[in-house]
Length: 200
Length: 200
DNA sequence: GTCTATAAAGCGATAGAC
DNA sequence: GTCTATCGCTTTATAGAC
Image (tube, rainbow over all chains, first blue to last red):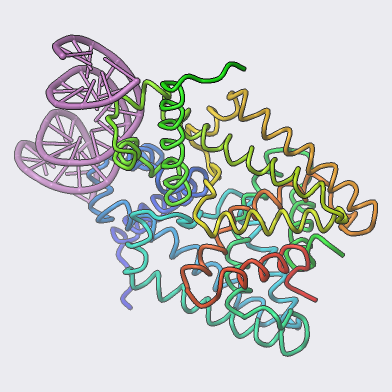
């Protein structure tokens, strides 16, 4: 990989700024309510300029999703180096995703049908990162089940989906909006609810 | 209450048909992606006719939300008459909401900011039903905690929000879309995850 | 109340000059 | 590549005849 020229660095920085804005808006209002006009207003460029970088609104969202997936994979790598049991790795990763969400930096997935869903399913880089993450977590889940740290009645698939879903759990934003608890209190209560359940 | 005339009954039936369609569409694609044109197409009436019954798209959604809240309150009443411990009542209600969701009849709440959120907050009937349900469930939660059936480390508010959130948990539709499990299997796995947690 | 037709506004995306 | 200006489409909502 050649050293990027100054000009290329400037363009890269601009793309990063765009993805930053998209990430914030996706976390705040979701894909359907986010408008391209808002994105360019936040970045301070013209709409036509944005479309020189990204071909469509869906591509814009995919870039944000790829970035959060890659950051999550980095966190997975970091946790893999720690001396932790598989269950603890999963728990720590859940804490991390909840903190990202509390910081307003977790773009929400397309829960319902949306033009975004189809676009993401045929987006090669996004699907690659998603499958890579699923594989990594699948290994941790299997190991945790083998050690008795996770319920063996639950198929690994169900555990995986649940962890993904808790990364953008609306309960978190409800509690944060209430303003009654510190961020870390919220994280601990939801991690407890997720792994320990509502009943003792 | 006077006996409704035949004409009034016909109008009521039409309004019910409208709310039916809205409910289906809200469950399927959510508020932002649902269009009024789709609603009138399903019901088979003209758009202007619909606006004689409901003042806005938000009023339309509110009617569907009120109906599901009232149905839930009916189920709460039914469960209150059964000889069950408070924790079992909550668990049974969770099962019921999940079955409603599997049947494609659970309109999804406005998770993110939306024009719907503000409209619902100032909608008297909706807010009344929501608060009534919250009060009823709050009693069950307090009783279950007093009996040791629910974790006392969790504020009742957190338990309540969690139960509301699980009523439209995306994990459910993911598993249903996978087609690998029977509806009742999905319900049991998610009830177990919710009350028992991922770890044993 | 129901219809057809249309207004009014917002949206994603693009043309064309520089 | 960036800008201004605009296209083309969809959407919510309403006017006006019956």
